[in-house]
Amino acid sequence: MNQQPDITNPFDPMATWRAARDASLESWSKMMIEFVNSEAYSQATSQWLDTYLAYSQPFQRAIDTTMTQVLTGLNMPIRTDVTILAERLTNIEVRLDDLDVKLDDIQRAVQALPTSQPAADTNVETRLDKLDARLDDIQRAVKVKALPASKRAADTSAKAKEVK
Amino acid sequence: MMAFSSIPMTPTELQSELQRIEQETRTLVRVSTSKANVAQTPKEVIWTLNKAKLYHYIPVVPAEKRHKIPLFLVFALMNKPYILDLRPGNSFIEYMVKQGYDVYLLDWGAPGLEDKDLNFDNYVLDYMPRALRKVKAISGSDEFSMLGWCIGAILTTIYAALRPDNGLKNLILLTAPLDFTDKKAGGFVRWVNDQNYDPDKIIAAFGNMPGQMIDYGAKALKPVENYIGSYLTLWDNLSNPRIVESWHAMNTWVTDLIDMTGATYRQLIEELYQENRLIQGTLTIRGERVDLSRIRANLLNVIALTDHISPPCQSESIMTKVSSEDQLLMKVKGGHIGMMAGSGALKYTWPHIEEWLGARSD
Image (tube, rainbow over all chains, first blue to last red; front, side, top):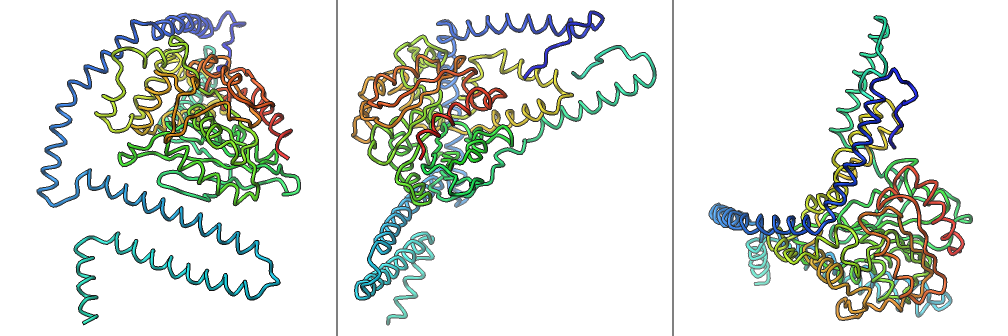
């Protein structure tokens, strides 16, 4: 990528400077590569990291504890709550993907059926309708699960009243 | 370069020099404070799961002239995959689409703390099979070619060994760090084998392996080039738009860091870099032993001659471990990234990969 300096022009002081700079950088680079590949550098880096983690962790833990107490006091979600929620969403996504796979399989199976058998077609259509209805049920269940507990309780009691 | 290229003699020359310096200063500020427009090859998202996305690139070659077998790309976990589609004219994906391939790219996304327990088992046995199922459904082909780069090559190798009968026809590995027998080959393997280096402590502290730490490690392998040389290259070529735009795009990618999930990092360091389980045949993924001899797909193993991140000795030995009858070890000019995204890639790497794959994609 680097353009070669114009070393053909002896009156250009910049070209001479660039050539000298590049030469010194090259030797410096070789020296540094040898250094970072040495046992001494490996040990020093590991020890530095070990020390950094040992000394920084108590402070980090103190900050985490304080933040947890403050957020809990303010009745706000802490990091763990958000993480758990994200994990649950991922699990739902995985299950939806599984359903997607099954639907694709069904679609392929339907397409593979011979078209000259109307009775069989009707049967498959009925099964697809049933499957569709089950998927709707699952979707509703997922929506309900995603609602906050208080809202869910309110919905349940409302339904109970309707039943009465 | 942003200095007097020759001493200005007349007021007109002086004015012209000042204008040039002003222009180059603007360029310098722009490229060092903004993101380049990257990943421009037209595509659509065809599948998502958690943070992962599967892209399908819009074909530009008529269907009857396209290769029948789709190409599935898997990049590393700790950098963004758009290095494969850096910018128009310097994009491997754009090149392959123009050559008539049906190209799919798996983007792992940026993991959060909630993903800290994701490991190779999840990536290989949960994400990849689902993404490949979609590739097969969209392309209409039961067979596929798979290209893995860096850690992506580890994932594709493990997948190829665990699921050899799932339609994998061609396997392309780029700068694959697979064999860590030589504990002194390169900085990474040496550093992580130090007795004081404990990945568990890092994971306990951060949850995931921070992208900044991985970046520091990668840059520290060639400190002068990465911390000084790269910026001098820009400084010297500020009047050359082609080089400036190329630098800008590469700098955008280099600084676009993502974390690696804690469980994956632990597995990578302990089971691969330290215990060398993959090449020894003792690695297990969700209870299944990864037996490299089960790989029967046609194999192209591309090694960069000046790769300082995955030295050639880490990539070569797989050739003797697989059962592929059709296999080729290709050594190309360049480094770990430059081999595929540098200015010489279009000449020294892409045509060779395309030629090999083209003969096996119909």
